[in-house]
Amino acid sequence: MAAQFGRRLRRGATTTAVAAVAVAALSASQGPGAVLASDGGGGDQRTAGSVPSDDSAATGNSPYYTDLPPLVTPNKPGASTNLPITGSAESGIPASVLAAYKKAQQSIASSDAACRLPWQLLAAIGKVESGQARGGRVDANGTTFSPILGPVLNGQGFAMIKDTDNGAYDGDSTHDRAVGPMQFIPSTWATWGQDGNDDGRKDPNNIYDAALAAGHYLCAGSRDLALAADLDRAVLSYNHSNEYLRTVRSWFDYYKRGTHEVPDGTGVVPPPLDGGSDPSPNPGTSPSPTAPAKPKPDPEPSKPGGGSTDPKPPTPTPPATQPPKPSQTLAGMENAGTGALTATAGDAFAERIKVRAKNSLGGPLAKVSVTFTIAGDTDARFEGGKSAVTLTTGSDGTVTAPVLQAGEATGKFTVRAIATGRSLPAVLYTATVTARQADAIARTDDKALTAAPGAEFADAVEVKATYKGAIASGVAVTATMITDGDTPAENDKGPYFKDADGNTVRALTELKTGADGTLLLPKIYADDTAGTYKLRLTTEGGATVVIELTVEAPAA
Image 1 (tube, rainbow, N blue to C red):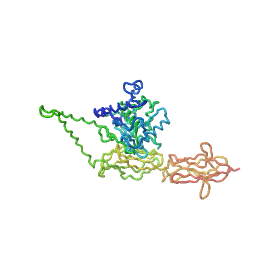
Image 2: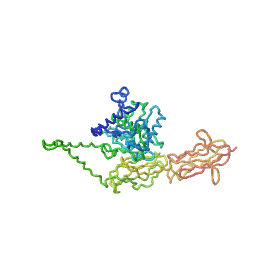
Image 3: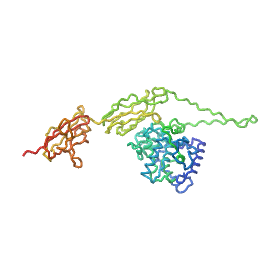
Image 4: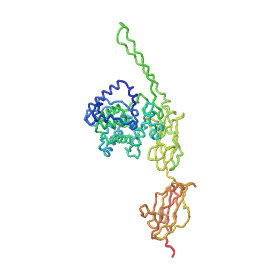
């Protein structure tokens, strides 16, 4: 995430001084090819300092964590990066997150070896953007337990970026928000998104997908990241800020000096940006500026001759904060009685997904933002064609997702409900899409079907499928030439079909009824064997019809 200038300036002179010392020390110790160029450098630095236009930043210049690494690095320069599980907590990277960075480096080394992407650069950006996916809070597939969302980019303290994904990734259909552990804005993800864990999906909230996408983005434009100037260009293209560049460079050098693996979920969780309660505000809200505190008058100096000449500093008064009441604290989410989710391809699910937010006392909690996301290999969508929607719980603590519409893809998929921007377990719902069915199928005419040996049948075969008396469109049908007997099998002689290459086939499987429920079979041909044969058609749902085909020589 990327902290705006106002937020950073309020950190005060102390943080600035520490940052300056840290960056100076790190810059002085970096090796060739990884030196952060100074403002007075040569030609490479002048090129690196050329900041791209704002509309191409991967993150939309959204807020980021400005904390710098410890001044004492985890190991001396040149030490192995495969250290045991010891050392500074800040040098520990969660296992799945670290694996994703290294896998992305290997993948790009195969596809774009000239880029020379170091995984430590991905780790540095991941640290600054999301605190390594909030300390590695990811599941076994590398997907964050809840979406990591940046503030609404509505121009109020941040960039103005109107919605580009209809809320599919960030749950906001008015403005964009940076998404995932590498904080891509949806429009950038649409171009650079990758499938890093080979699950067939490109998910910005998956660390493997996001790390590989970040690697490709940084390597764009034939960059060689072993060159300081190209590395600086790459980082600045991610977020247009020289302070961002210095912060990333600091972590980059820190991780190059040594790091170690820690279990997922045990990494260092960064503090909320600017003292807020959550780094991912609820959708539809914008950050509210904090009114500056009124300055207190300096204490009066001691009167002459009245004792010590040093004025006594005032005792600071801690702010009067009250912990939230248990009845107002979100403790978790639960299924609010959703039944079985099944639908036929192309139909709407009769059941609606419903979730309940609970407070610390187990009671309902209102005004909780909940994001419903469709996951898995499916073309099912919520009403309006959305794969993700964000809604708010009512007074009874419940919220119901829009109508779920099945697509043509059959099988199971998952709908995930999470408290938006909260690190709480998701509520998972399994949905099933079944193929369209028919309970009856019959010919549309009763003409006798005959052909001479070696000829084709003059009349075509047309059938119509129905389900409970209504037209059954899009129903899968199998057509097979079968033998006689109690246990029919595919016949190896008699009438046949032809495939696209003209080869003889006696079974067709990729057939479907049309919008009116009818199916016209391809041409049928007779071989040289006379006789009476059977053609069986079977629908999804078990409806069957057997049609008689006769092969005989014409009368003299």
